Image 1: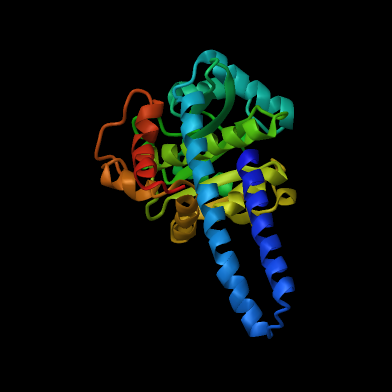
Image 2 (image 1 turned 30 degrees about the vertical axis):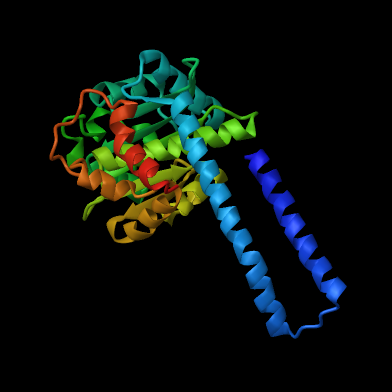
Length: 304
């Protein structure tokens, strides 16, 4: 990306410099309207160049991510431990489930945890999503229950998860903290697979709510960018996290944001018959299953 940006800056500087020299040499004195017209005529092409460079960079990132990273679900016992240890190490043990609790939740529904693996077999990130039963989902939203109280009875098993009306997006964790470019690539891959995972297993429908807790400002900003509404402040909750909620009547803004970042995931999955339980759920969610329709659409239309 830095190379593309350098090319862009160099090209834009040359054009601006040449344009200013042209005005100085001819000693052209134009009124504001004419200056604005000339500005648009000269710099509109630059906007197109910027857009094309950014689009190319995103397509290259997509191709590179697919070569480097793999989404693995169900996760292995070692990955389950690593995910739980990392979360509790960063945010403390006070408000998050223990390893024993986490294992029991995944034993009931092994679609909960998706690990992101690099080409060396190392776990570089993960996310977990819980299809909650109605009673516990309502308690979570009201603040009467926290993640600490979650148990196997709080969620649907993998065979009946599509019945859930309360989809809890738990942790979204990126292990990379030193290399900014690699962290960005992992974040991009995580977001893309969270979306395809949700749209495959728990797609938007009337009455369905997506809820998430933000334990950091970065997490809050990510949820806001996908049009989640801030429902409860952390000072009013026992888990000391801000509650964010996305309901069906607000889903249009979220879909527009997803389209801008990743292309038309929603309709490509809908056309594939994956949006509702029209097809049986697979024993495991492999990278090819989750991302096939997304990749096909993006690579065909170059929409990122």
